[in-house]
Image 1 (cartoon, rainbow, N blue to C red):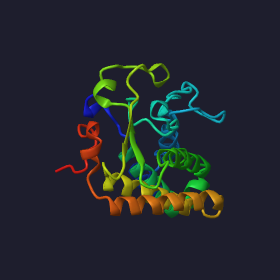
Image 2: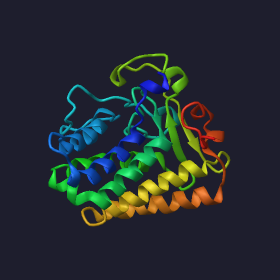
Image 3: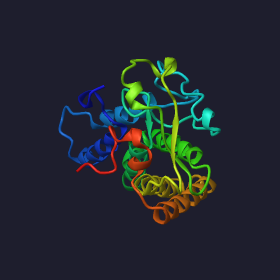
Image 4: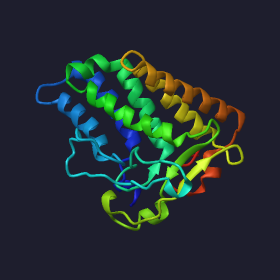
Length: 238
């Protein structure tokens, strides 16, 4: 897929914030509440893994159920990036960071439109995956699948037959940017769930601290370690 055809999940949280800021100034004829609802619903279409009975996007089904199996780790879940079936850790982490801060700053507005619960579900779907992707303090899986092969094969996630190799960073192959952004996502989400689910919040904070220490101690660019990501999400854009 060309870049013009891909709408990465990392762009949608910025859309949320614009909508929430614009609601008080909404002009007649523009339904910002519906736009917010559809923006959050988008994430249900991007879900990977075992889908729950509450899934609202009914044309989607379970997929990626063997992700991580070849590496001896459970990497089922998370989000597909765009119209492809790759799970890129860096934009996914940025997405969860921004979604979490959207809830922290504008949770009341989301609640007034009946979308807060859906937003929390979207965040937790991402953080549940990050917990799996961080099986050891200094290990983080940052990608599942390979865009170089995936983008040549147009398949539904439920039917994909492309390579599902899992790629990780560790002390010998560091990725400070990836580990740091994932730490930010976990830390922000821990604030979101602090009152409603304190034990889960504490778990997220533990992972956030470990990931930050990992990022700081073993420094390096993640795309030098997970080289298959270079064509899609580089460590720097310059």
